[in-house]
Image (tube, rainbow, N blue to C red; front, top):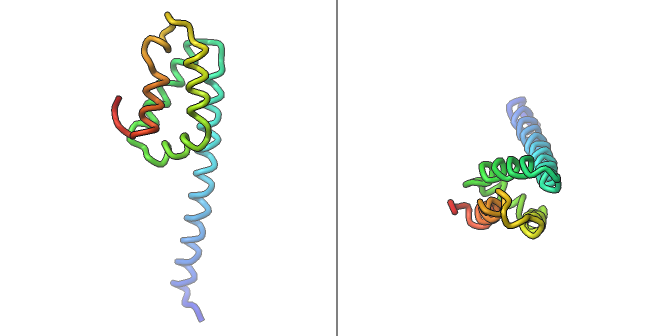
Length: 108
């Protein structure tokens, strides 16, 4: 028969696992919303989203894995293809910086 300590520990582990799973779902939904904002016509919004993504992905391997498998490269490359040559996003290469951060977890 399990002691109360073992039962409590099992419950804690189960709760931690469930909480981690819930947090991961929330992160994926949040990243999807950020990536959706890259489709906005407003250049200021797209630029700010890219700055947020650069900050989030810098050195965060788990987040980079999620982004890599959630289709972020397709979205970022589409933004690059749609930009005019003179836009801030095109001249600052922020989409490339996010891609680089996701791929190698290092400063570009």
